[in-house]
Image (tube, rainbow, N blue to C red; front, side, top):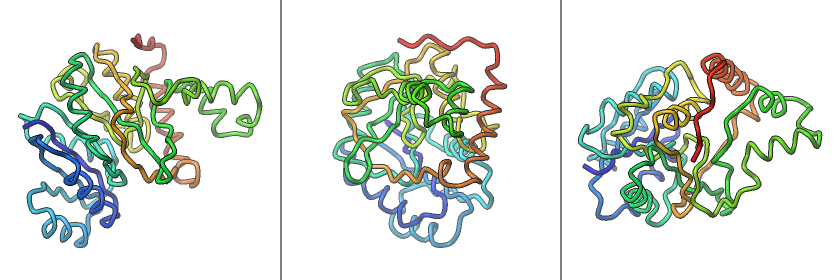
Length: 263
């Protein structure tokens, strides 16, 4: 088995349908399985999977225990022989040969633990999907009126890696968790997702632990995927609060610990 493709879905069966169809249409000459975790599952999603994708592994959950728990549940139910885990949100549409390109890149670069594609909006503009590590000051600037000052904009642009060419393959501090191509063998040292993060920062934490374990995290824009990114944390007080709580957990976890070397 080459790849276990893990898709996390939350009440969007129509979008999940598009995601799986795009994968099936674009993946070629690779042995893979599809595992769909449906959070707060209902009959619509189960019917879709059973009828349209009978070969897929369907894992329903009755409650929303968090994104990291859903990913870990899928990993534990994946084929242990698969070399890679491709963790996706359901709102991802694979472009031509994207999965094959990521697979080939990882095969050629054995020191890479996680790689991620270039994520595109549906107008083909490039989304922010690779970042510097968070600091408390970045959270403050992003969440308050300070974001409007020139000194904060400079720091936020650096956090978003605005000074980098996003069409070049390069090491990055962390990648957005919407699409992470993970080397299974590297999990033995880096570990699974930290389930203390209900949502947000689980991807930051995971990438940081991969770097610490000696595996690189690489942004690979030759592989492209469309992403319907709702930006809930900036549009909803509920999600903003969840984001801040996760940030506090993250800073407590890493308080006083040095950042890993990026190379």
